[in-house]
Length: 548
Image (cartoon, rainbow, N blue to C red):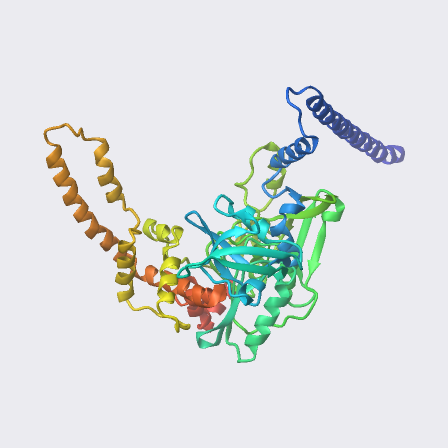
């Protein structure tokens, strides 16, 4: 019996070891064969294809093809086109500080960034950039134009600009500087001493900027705090964790990452005492555009019952990417792990899977999880808000007004006619009619469905028909009716139109920060957060968890 009890575990261990060795050998063989096959195909194409192929381009295409089969976030990065990644990883880039946009066929300045070369030399919102150095901009797409404007610190950029009201083109010669990306795009006090911080990115300096904003507002006996990460696509994991440090007790687990290799398995703890006092009511605002690092911050604060989460469900990106240098000019951004919040929940959505190769990312025993106060959360679908709230939905008409930049164009004209205009600007209801008349005079009024139907009637009526003249009379009558209908549809969204005019007027006069400040007075989610935070009882009831 003693012999049997000793030998059986040894035999079992040998069997398992043999099985594991077989699997390893098979996997290694598959890898070697796969690499050999790829090399053979690559060489055969270069040697025998009907046209001569650039090896570098073929290699890039093969890499892109492989990564496409993995997940949406693994990418092959060319350093010549890596502005967005550089802005995230370093928090800065070489440029002159202008936000570019397209209006019809023109490349325009949406706004210059305060304190940058463009701002200091007098480039204005609405300026049309006609030429960048020696290249005309009419056929440039936005990404290519942005790439041309960026460059090494100290290098020279020449812009030819057409400005409304100026008969001659304006020539600017700008020296590029390191432009720091403002992660905190706005911070300030709202009513009832409620602090508000709009966190737009998570890059190298995000936590530092967030801390400065909170400390500055703390000087005035702060009564509540709103952190807004709506539309924030994320960024550096470290930035999200350092932001969480400002709220969570030192030594607490903030996050865990788990991957296939040992180096990917890590636990992250809060590394410093919080600066936000325990009794300060906090809300964090999220929506479908809040992803990755935004979800980490919101999820941590929710798991520790430190903040009320208000808004709409977040995007659901719970995958970690690491960046590896491949060559002096290229990098590989590869998904290497999944992250798990303090409660143990994975917030990665399942819907983004495409095939069996990606199926492993969905494998999880996630069911439900508990916060510190025993509140129940579901895993695997983004961060769910404690309070659902959304801003006014965009109607087709309002969407058309924004898409055609009509609020912005009107604000430019309005400001040019009033040179001494200063912030803040508040429009009366009568401004809606002024805006409508301004569009009508310029034939800018967006086409309604009724107007579209009337204009298409010509396609179904024979012009030689005996009733064609009667049809024209009917069409004219309908057109008059449509004008009344279009104006009525316009007045139905009067509140949204006034909000749009005030936002863009603030942008023209004060830049992007002023635009955000103006938008807060009309933002239903922010107003809901203020309402909740002003009621200490409501905050306590939400965060307290079940009472039974």
